[in-house]
Amino acid sequence: MVEAVPTPLRVRQLDRARDKLIVALDVAAVSHALELVERLGEAVSFYKIGLHLQFDRELHALFDHLLLKQKRIFVDFKAFDIPATVEGAVRMAASLGIDFVTVVGQRPIVQAALRARGNATLKILAVTLLTGMNQEDMQREYNTALTTKEFIRRRAKSAAETGCDGVISSAREAALIRDSVDRSDFLIVTPGIRLPGAMQDDQKRVMTPYDAISCGADYIVVGRPIVKSADPAAAAAQILADMDRAS
Image (cartoon, rainbow, N blue to C red):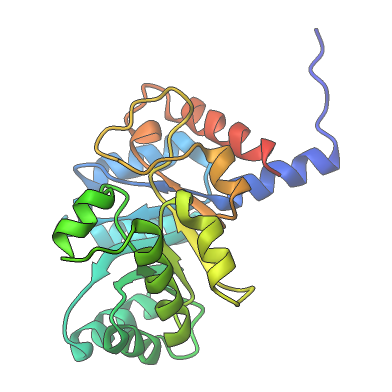
């Protein structure tokens, strides 16, 4: 059977899905991350580097490799410190050509990050509520009687008003954030993504790729379903196919 040649429209749809997929390099060593990048090849154009690799001596070699391959980079260290310290960290990220960084969304921290960014294209993203937490966890840890939706609505509005470029939040709250923030350029980046029927691991507020994009997420972050797969490229293709249905 002869495989059909993709139409220009189909190619553009797949490219749009690929642009919205961020693969989390949550692995034990930079050497493993570099191997994954090679195995995923052109299927993935955007990578997240988190705390797993923060202290690896070869971390800057990973930055250099990704930039050489013309990949986009999201550094997810969730900066939380006095404003002067956050300002220094974000200034360095901007100088490296990184695309996204995360901060804890207190106003002085966000303002320091925005000052440090200057005219760079770096996007500053605030965390609303970790996807490993449910309402009971949130109410206990933050000593609040607010519902999850109201807590996240308030944090997203505060981040937007302070000047953040977007938030990290579960796709379950994406539509709520869209309705609450009157900014068309406000980004919603959603972790906690799983294909239908897949194990949730330690994630508690999950959604499928299709549902996340349909609900208004600009980007989805996928780690273990791809990086722990015996065939990461095939796993990424499954994710992209599910995203593509929402396009």
